[in-house]
Length: 314
Length: 274
Image (tube, rainbow over all chains, first blue to last red; front, side):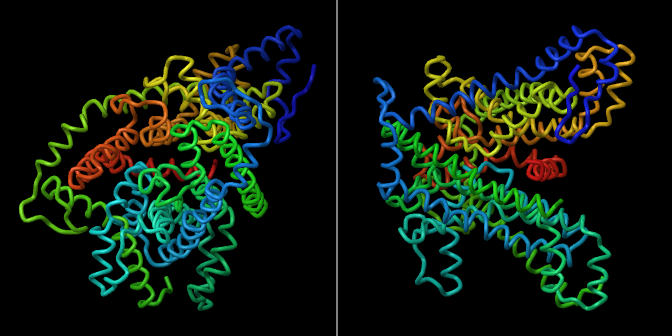
């Protein structure tokens, strides 16, 4: 009989007991084992793998959703690269990475280390709950709430006026230059708490003796931060980056609700453009080409982050 | 603790400021919701005569009971099925080590980073062909499938770390694989199953893209999808929009406050393992 070895080099648990059974029994167990995996596989195949293959097929075709499908080769991909409004969505997605990912993770590291150093007990746990709140509400709600906060009579302008910055007030989400950073601000609000709490959990796993001895040596917050916190939290930072980069590149809900991609195309990200192309303009082929590019893009960006963080964790 | 007093207070001040920034948006939509319907108040302004009736009106126009039922139905259809089939698959891959387990795992893991927008177009056309477009099933079936990569990966992580003695003992007692699964391993996996259940419930309740594309009727949608439709209708009536948004958030907020420890733990573990 074949001995099956798993990824972690543990041989199959029942190998010994199986050997006492005839060959037929082994085959029966294989079949039963696979039957356990089949329901998940069928659902996954039918509603993820088949659509994935169809997206790729559509991306090489010209189709309006009802008529016949015509093969056009790479034409849709060429179009995405040539039309500024389409390739621009990918540029916007990378800008969102700055707002949704780099700033929340960087700021989260600082805030978490501050909480870790000064706020233990009741304030710490209250902060944990409050900062996590934006993470559990629907992104649609975050978009609606901030759509109002960033409006002309909204809270943001009210505060700016109160501190004497009345001159810079504007309808933030309707401004060609400021709409994308404003959407980014919503992302920071949603993701900062999540990053902070995740990194804080990582910090509590670091041996307190390390911090203790650093403090006995009179280390400042900054020294402690650079010498202990950041290097030891590489795995958690990797996790935060992975989650937030996917949130940025695949952004949809917040953008759809707060700006719908406008004004002009200044906040259009691939998700929004795919939706508009497919479901209002009926350019299924073009939308699918952009969808394939988005999926490839996410994998290409995420893989190095995963590799880096796992290497350092091992 | 050797932390200077000044630093201590600076740190606490930063923390409080951050909490205020997190809470303030909710307070702003609350005070806005109390202004007369149809007016445009400023961001943070307690009204002269609070219009509590706005919440009643929002409750009526949003048809809150229907939305609650619809959302709950979708969660109750998606989560138990997803839990059962992903636990079974995780068991087969992580513990039974079926031939081809590694390839199968790879196939599921491949879907972990897949953006929903990437495959929504064919799902739309498939569901039109299957005549389930504009029904709750149109949301339920793809959601179960889209959760499989994460859910199978999560459950497999539990089973692969179990000591083999547990199964061996049951085998010696003559238990079939079916009984081994339901009577020994499902009870042992209560904790990861519960966390996974919490995660998928939150994700389902908050799911927006699928209802937006696949279901036109708000009363057949998830709460997030219904909220999107509500915004579409009342975008110009800001006090009513704020009242409705707050109202639709109430179930989430209540559940979060009641189960905050479990929810935070589940979401954090979910991120770390995924």
